[in-house]
Every structure is written in structure tokens, then in C-alpha cells.
Image (cartoon, rainbow, N blue to C red; front, side, top):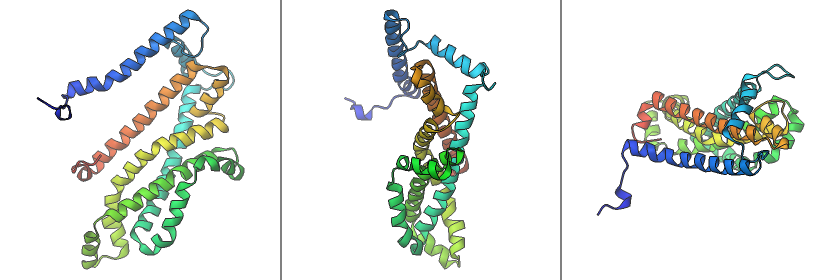
Length: 273
């Protein structure tokens, strides 16, 4: 008798099983929405798909009467720009700090404890400080993402640097490699795919900080729109925006994963994600 732990679904069955939960959720939503709207046609908690489609059509394909912009696409562009800038700067800072503190004991001793303490500070607690120091403009929003993401990336790269076999460093030094050569020729090539993985893992937090900052002080953005329409209980806008954010996050993660597989085949050949 085959045990359940040894049963592996075929590729088509695996795809079908993966889609089944989403189909079930949609079915349950349709049933619940129809029931609520039948009892109360003006109910706003569970709008129908047609109501959500009408709301998104107005935001995406009809210019705003106040600004003339297509709000949905403007919100998307603004949020992606902030997220990309914040995560990009955080990745560069985190990579450099993690590399140096992981590879150089003289830097690890004084700065590793400080990095640990900084990574434990809740970034959201610093949001009022960032608004006071940098104002309510773009800089404070990007700074929140940087402060929230950079310490995580730095600690991850630091750990990965220290996990590289010492034998490689010894062999490089035996061949006459300097500290600079070891960093550039030995460590960095092995850490770049791990940097992409660290970015993927930190994107969820990056989206969280972005939405929070936009919800508090902004004039556009996906988070701003969600917080703006919540006072009117506009679930026909909130739910599609949440779904769109989820799709964007999935797409960015998919692009990073495939970029890593394309550029660093040797890293993924051993079964690394």
C-alpha cells in the first residue's frame, strides 16, 4: 500500500490542485456576495464582480475630473517607483554592509552587534521621526523602505558570507590574492544570487512599509487610494487594489527568480531556490 508521503502528483494534476483553492475562494465569494446583495442591494461589504469592474473602469480608463490623470495607472506607477527606489538602495547598502562585516573580522567585531540592534527596531515606530526629519514628501517614504529592508538584507548577506568555505579564501591567498581580489573575485560572484534571494524575501516587508507610508502621507499611490476610499466603505475599489498589489508582488518575485536562474545557472544547478 502506498503511503501518502510517497504520492507525487503529475504535472497536470499538480497545476489543477494549485488552482483549486483559488477557484474555491472565488466561488465562495460569489455565493456570499450574491446572498448579501439579494438581501440588501446597497450592501457595500461584498460587491459583485460587475460592481468592481465598473469601479476599476472609472479609475483605469476615465481621466480624473480634477487632475486629468488616469488614477489607477498613476497610483501604480508612483508605488512601483517608490518601491523600486527604496528596495534598490536598500539592496546596495545591505550588500555592501553585509559583505564587509561578514568578510572582515575587524569590521565584524564593532558593527555586527550594531547591525543586529538596528534590525530589531520596528521601522513603523520610526515613521513619525522620518516625517519630521525628511518631511512628508517622497524622501520619507523611500527612507522607511530603506530602513526596513536594508538591515535584513545586510544580516542575510553577512551570514551567507560567513558560510562560504574558508578553504576557498585560503586557496585564493595561497595564489597571492589580496583582500580586494578575494572580495571581488571570490565572494561577490557567490553572493550575488543570494542577494537576489534576499531581495525576494524582503519584498513583502517592502510592500508593507510602502502601503503604510502612502496611507499616512501621500497624494497618490496604491496605498493612498486604499486609505482614501475606505472612509466611503468602497470595497469595490479596495478589493481590486489589494488583488492588483498581490499580482504585482507575485510578478516582481517571478521576475527576480527567473533573472537569478538566467544569470546564475551554476547556483541553481545544486537545487537552490
